[in-house]
Structures are given as C-alpha cells and as structure tokens.
Length: 353
Length: 78
Image 1 (cartoon, chains in turn purple, yellow):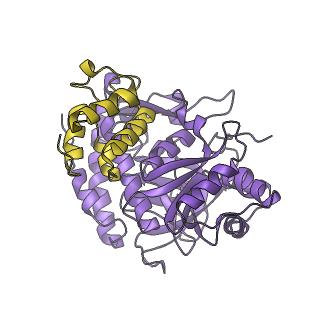
Image 2 (image 1 turned 135 degrees about the vertical axis):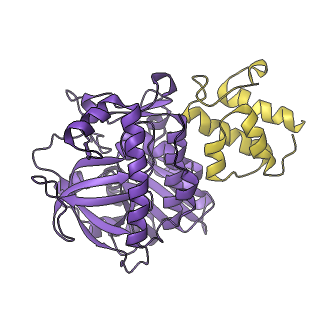
Image 3 (image 1 turned 45 degrees about the vertical axis):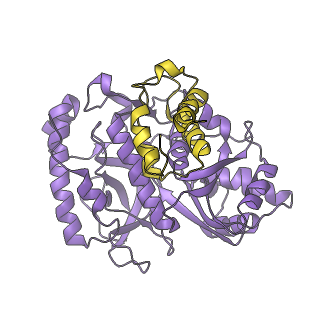
C-alpha cells in the first residue's frame, strides 16, 4: 500500500509563505489523508478515532501507554523515547527510515530560515560528546543534538563528559571561526547553568557571531527566576554580542517540525506544522491571546500516528500571518506545563549538582 | 590513493567494517552504522575528498552505493 501524498509538495511550498486560507486547505487535505493512512495501519489509533471521533488529537501520554505504530515492527529503524524520570513510563516513538529522514530534512529547512544560511555552519554544541556517543540513548536531548549536528560542520562540544564547562574547547572554536557565522545549539537550561553562569563566574568571554538555537523549556530557568531578556543578555555577555538567541518549541513526538522564535520573540509554525490553543474542558479553540492547552499538528510522521497531538503544555496563539518579522502562519507563546500533568522528563532532565 | 580506495577507506575507518562487506551496506544495516556512526562516516568522507556536503545529502547518504552518487555531485570521480 503506498501513501498517496507527495511530500515533494510540502517541501516545495514556502515554509512561511502561505496565507491562512491556503494553509488551511492544504492542511485539511493532508490531515484527511494522514488520518486514513494511520487508521488503516494502526489498529489502536483506529479505535481511538472510532470512539472519540476521526482525527481527534492524540494525548501525548498515550505514547507511554500504547505502542502506537503505523508500520510493521520490522520496519522500525529507531525508537525515540522521552527521558522520563525514574518511576515513570517513557513515551516510545517508532520511526522508519522515511519518517526519520523527512523529519531531519524539515528541521534543516526550518533552522536555515532562521539562521539565514543554506550552507552548514560551524557548530558548537552545549553538551558533552558522551551524551551523543551513548548509542543506547534516544532521548529528546540526544535526538536533538544528532538531528542538529547534520546542519553543522566542525561540530565541537562545550562540555566535558562530566558536564563541566570545557572553556578551552569553546575558546578554540571561537578562534577557529572568528569572522564566520556560527551555530550554537543546546538545551536552554544547560546553556544557562553549565555555560553562561559558569563562564561568567570565572570571568570568561568570547566574541562569536551567528545564532544560538536552544530549546527544552524554561521551567528550570523560571524556577531560578531567569527571564528571557536576562537569558539573552547573559548569552551575549559570555558568547558575544553578535550571537542571537533563538528559542524553539518541539517535542520528541513531533521531531523535525519545530517552531522557532523569530526576531520579534514569537514562536512560528511552519508549513509542516500548526498550533491551536484549546479549552481543555470542551476541546474547543480559544480566541487568539487567550491561554489554552496546545494542540500541535505535524504533517511529517507516517510511521506513527503523531500528526495531531494534545500536548500537556499551556500557551496562547497570538496571531496569524501578521508578525512584523514577515513570516506567515500562526505565532504563539508557551507558558508552561499544564497543572496536574505529571512532570514529564523533557530535554532538561540533566540534574545539576 | 585512488578515489575508490579513499571512499572505501572512509567506511572501513569510520564503521570498522571489512572491505569485503561494503557492497550492499546500508544505513542502520549494521550496529556501527547508526546515527552516531553516520556522522563519523560523513566526516571521514568529507576529509578524504576535502568536500562539504549539503545537509540533505548527509541525510540521503543511506547506503554504500547511494553514497557514490552523492560524492559524484561534488565532482569526485570514483
């Protein structure tokens, strides 16, 4: 059985150029085909739709309770897991080679749009090489690093395997690429605690130019009362005033179709994705600006039914098509984890001392 | 060294496979060629020919044979 939809169409459509009515009709067509694809091939998903309605958002926690896949077991190329904290079940996301390659290609398109570079950029990863080399780990953090590494060259690690800052490595990287635009990538909490705060306390700084892409959530920083403005200032102080911090929202259940923060500080859904804030009691969309539970769409997965998810994140859709940055589509902000949701091990599960 | 030798060497060094096992070798086909091994292989191929591949080509580099087509795009004759 072949999948009727041609991903070439999506990859050729502009990432942020469709106006709302065009995007709505494109997504309606794709979602309808994805629904039938997954209902046909994933019996559990078919039952969920039969009970709750066709195309109903799948609550992310179901990936912990069920083995949701739309491929034969033998076609699973890798299994991504959320790095759940001890005692919790982990989500299991099953990827075949097609879904995995498609997700990485989409990721690279999206990131290029925000870095402004089509070529691979020199890349500094704010993590330890050991995190990536550990072959048994397929957490959001390792997956993020591996996915982003394909966009980098001279991939260099800023932390030692015990997660201590390797400033010599950072300094040497900055020197090697002085005058070039670089890509720095890491999880928000690690960037702050293990790089910025540590370097600052030791009086270290370098001058780099480019983009710092970071994600994984603000929760731990909010606990430390670090605001986005303070984060940006700290980053520039340590890594250089020419380095623009760029947050992203993404999850292991929808790898690739991440939403990145624009020059105006808003997260943007691309042609591959969409976002809606809903009232958890009625599941109906709330108006722009109002807080709701986020429902996220990704047109990328064909190996598991993760195309429309009910997340455990609360946030607000702020508007559509009219962000001053010039990108079309919806832009939104994330406020945090839904109250009462179990603490999910997201990317920032590294426990500092 | 001939280019074909360099190409095969990159696999041997990055993935620890024997030359005899290269024909038909695919990404995820052996434990060593996983996503970690893939980046080592890419680095080895790029070093061997002094090229820089596009991200899409790194993603599409899915087998020993497919890789030959890809390096050919960078004016490497095997």
